[in-house]
Length: 277
Image (tube, rainbow, N blue to C red):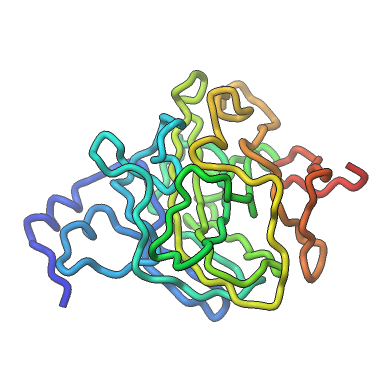
């Protein structure tokens, strides 16, 4: 039986500001998993099994050179990077994944970006380290004058949904989902990264697995990456979403795995595929 001291529970409920993913739903009908709850999970004995790797709190990572930017961490508190979780969620390729964020501050505007990385073995014992293993599967930035975070996210009651690529090769993966808040990004450091990682086992008969355009965390973002230093209050109509292009695009069923010569166009936050790149 899981137990939590009442005094610690009372203290935990008083913590405010920022945000994190509190729940994830896979497919339809949905299989629902709790996120890692940093205000209460550390105090349970025994620990509650989670699919989401431990995060130190609801605050951001601003130093993009730290391993903390991978799955959230706290190097200054001797908890860098990400520690593997004990559970793995099973999800079919082509299924939806919905991230339910805690109440997000409307001032914290910016993009939502999702990456995946295939584990070479048991994901409950694997960490990517600084290897370039991550490929981007979804992104949303400034869409028709509205920010993915916070306007579109809040309009959808804090829920952001993407689709596991239908042609993705079966195996165990980390899903890395993040908001990059830009309210202080007019200089570096300033952009606030709120990452999290969930452990999944993807099923299906697909064979798609990117071998180019892979990035590392840290490494994918630096002070010179377009979209990291950005004045969100200048009335801009476009925003360069940080990082590489998405590895897959949906062109019916199954989806299409891009090669390194393809590029995205149409800078409205949706990055539609442009042929002949």
